[in-house]
Image (cartoon, rainbow, N blue to C red):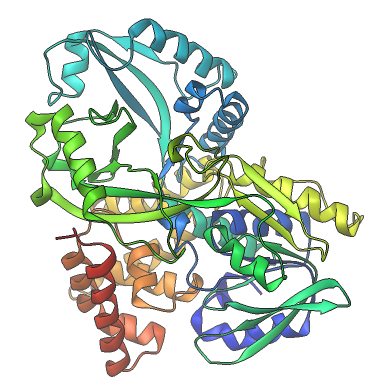
Length: 543
């Protein structure tokens, strides 16, 4: 088993293996928390399986703020423990996985009559650096007025005294989740998407596995495991209900909405962080590849934990905040290329507490039946959350001498930074005109990009062939792509593509996509229309 069988065509084989084998651990949930538990367990030598009800990273882990950050604002709320952990995890990932976790400067503009006071910012940054062990990617620095305006020409000049430049990191969250999951598969784990759990299996009072429904074939499959981990995030209560229990601590949904602008429409050369003139909430306009991501709204929402639809009130709040703070940028609805909303499952300490002040710490509980549930946590700290979950699992099962200690703080995902750089350099020398595309491939796939680059180079002699064809073939054959939405939204697309671009790319690559996913013309058309409707509902500006 491995990535060569991690595809739609191999699902019958994977489901048969899931049925036939006895596992040490079954993880329910294919977001970043579940994927991190899965990878950690596989690297330790555990026999581990993972099942996901929809596609991997299709809920919170693909709809986040796409930051790996220390949590500067946690210091304000005296969440020093979480900030310390977040800073150290960010620094670890930048060191181990720099292709995926990209350090970037963040600019906080400082004004004479509003926003953060300079002395308070100095104190906060010293605490931030101390929590990082004074080991950040680069040390923060304070800029004068001219230096600040050179980085962010659209900032209002009136009252501007300077700025503070510090470093955090940005990430493609769904790509990050996918790479973590693939590393678990490459190390012997079994994983499948579109396989919701319909029943928890018991031996007396103890849970010993789960029954899943394969949505593609309509079949059912019983998976036997010594321990089951519920890592379903916003859907955690549904699995608890299968266990005959409700949440031990109150879990509420916090909704966040984000807007995407084209890079050329934003008169900035770096990420900025500022307080909303409406309510003082911290907002960011973060620089990604060829775009800026703006967010985020943050409020409690009493709703079903299924995908949230961007609300007009959320979009209006973001745009009004941005234009009151930086009116000269003229970033209005017409400039928005893409929009998305996501839910965060947070532990609430009271009905009236503001969602932005609710803790982002994880909470792990073990039910009397042995079900291990993990709720909360962050994209940044998912690796260490997974280690804590496995500590609880080992307490339940006892330690197998064949299992190793946690390795995720030492093993890079998809190759070391040095190996990735060397492999990229080889293909750039072979085909210099595709340097930019090769760099994207290595950022996404690590050393696996070698296979794509070899195919791209091979087909260069065909004037009708496009390099993107090789990438589509790779993800369909090694990343369990089952639908057109999987392919464009979470595997081989770009954040800055608007809805029309996404649909156009599918039409353009229809022949190779149909061949790789074994779709008839009618099936492709049906999925294309379903994806168009999905984009209209979940990624269009509300009227």
